[in-house]
Image 1: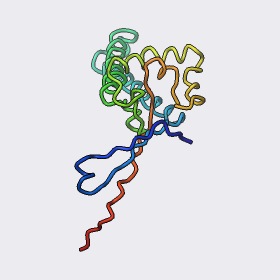
Image 2 (image 1 turned 90 degrees about the horizontal axis):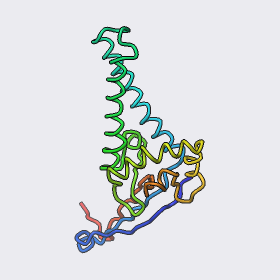
Image 3 (image 1 turned 135 degrees about the horizontal axis):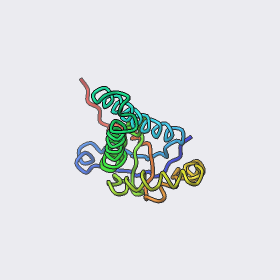
Length: 177
C-alpha cells in the first residue's frame, strides 16, 4: 500500500489559455519491497562487474598465478569506479541508480528535485553503512514512517518516491471529424 507524500496541482499558462487543461502530479511513497528490489539490482550489477573484471584479468594475465594479486585489485578498483558512478553520480544527477531506474523509483530531495552528487554520495556511502550498523533497523524505519524514509534518507535529506501523473482532462470543446 502506498501513501501520498505530496500533491501539487500544476497548470501551464500557455495550455490553460488555449485549452483550460491542467494535470495533477502526485508523489507516492515507494513501497519497501520495491526499494529492496532496487538495492538488490544495484548490488547484482556491482557483483557482475567484479566477477567479469576478475575473469577477464585472469584470462589475459596468467590465470591462477595472479590469485590474490593483480586480477582482484583490478576488479575491485573497477567495481569501486562503477559504484561511485552508479550510486553517486548517476543517482545524484538523475535521481535514479540502475536499480531505481529498473523499478521505476526516484530519489528526490524532500521538496522535490534531483538530490545532487554530494547528497547521493552521502546517502549511499555514509547512510547505508550506518543503516547496516544498526543491525538493519535503519532500513526498517522506512516501513513505519509515514513518508517511507529510512535512516539514510534522514541523513541525506532525501525521499524515495514513485511518481504518477494523472491523465490530462480534455477540454469541454471536442474536435469533430
